[in-house]
Image 1 (cartoon, one colour):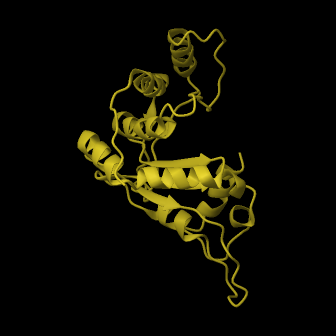
Image 2 (cartoon, rainbow, N blue to C red; image 1 turned 120 degrees about the horizontal axis):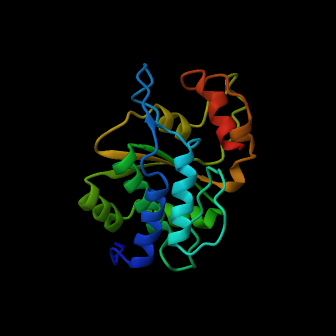
Length: 210
């Protein structure tokens, strides 16, 4: 089945623009060593400008709270208003404005995970974002890893390995999809004998357990 979308709905555009404005004019540092084709640039979230951007966006959205220094940005939307479409569009916009090429989506349940897979692999969604951004999503889906008692060595899940080792491309954005229940699972908590570039193992595990 091919989805048909209404584009540029005001509440969706407002949510995406809010995310872009939070990151506006922040310093971005690019890695120039042998890993530069594999990792995202780093956005400085420690600057005073970051707090000012957050406060400005909150004021525009009539949120009467004092901005805090946090790397968590919430977009709250009602069920049925297009959350999956909105955060997917935000991914493409962040890529366009700030050069971030790799994203991790963590969903609360397996049913929502299935819905996200259906959306991101749907022909209509692929065409819509390709027409607007001339790019598509390469989706990596992390599933529970069954232990292989016959093997003496343990290997990192292929989804993580492929996601981390994927090159930056002008034609695609890399997205790793995980359900929340896996965050404390054996798949993400164990140390693997054979990994990626060796030193990436600990970095990944620290990120997932924050």
